[in-house]
Amino acid sequence: MTNAKNVRLYERSGAYIPRIAAVHDLCGYGKCSLGVAIPVLSAAGCDVCPVPTSLFSAHTRFPKWYMHDTTSMLEEYLDAWQDEGVELDAIYSGFLGAPEQVGAIQRLYTEYPNALRVVDPVMGDGGKPYPTYTPELCAAMGDLVEGADLLTPNLTEASILTGIAYEGQDVSDNYVRRMLDSLVNMGAKHVVLKGIVHDDGLIRNYVAGADVECSEVSGELLPYMLHGTGDLYASALLAAIMAGQSLLEGVEFASTLVRDAMRITSAQPDYEVRGVSFETVLGEVTQLLR
Image 1 (cartoon, rainbow, N blue to C red):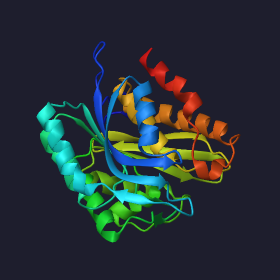
Image 2: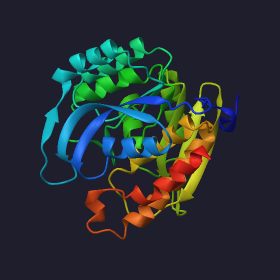
Image 3: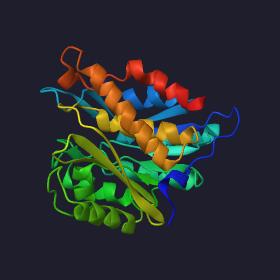
């Protein structure tokens, strides 16, 4: 078994700037999805190419929001990429607007077989799926697990994917191992399971893989929850990986960056709804390249 500190999913080469297709929604107000992924990955010296899966006026924690499903445009959008000869080093997917959009991601996998496949299965939190996630969409998301180089679910999303009952955030080591084993058996090469909380003031994330020793990374648990921290975590983890860090180093970096951003966020107006304020910690991301 390999230790996660020795697993590198991407080798950075000289001055080359890697190109990432970010398949996420775009939210006008409230910090999440492409609004997080683009600046974070750009700060890590990556060329971020958005594939918008839906357009939101605001994220779904606000009492009123508008959503526009972009499924009908994706085929021609990706056709144009093929005509232009776009090249990709990674495909990073998150929130999807419809079950059919899984096919667009699988098309990218076929057209870019050597690209790193990173799946953040953004489906829900607190034991419940998000309002736009139908049973059909949740089932389709499961098709992205097989072959994922990196899968980054929280406990709710892991429960939806595996069918293992959600038991809250304070779960046993045996439950964590069962969840990780199930996701790996579904075909994920590496899994980061996020957000396990006990009564000791720490939040834990676990790293595992078919040939990777299970590792735990813990950090300070802050006394409030924020929208968009999952998007920030996955984007920061991918930023570290694309900068050449190991999988375990990336998990440690993402955990620290999210904590630092959350501390800054609590000083902002309406922070509990607006989302995580990552702007002033982007300097930590640029340091990955030095």
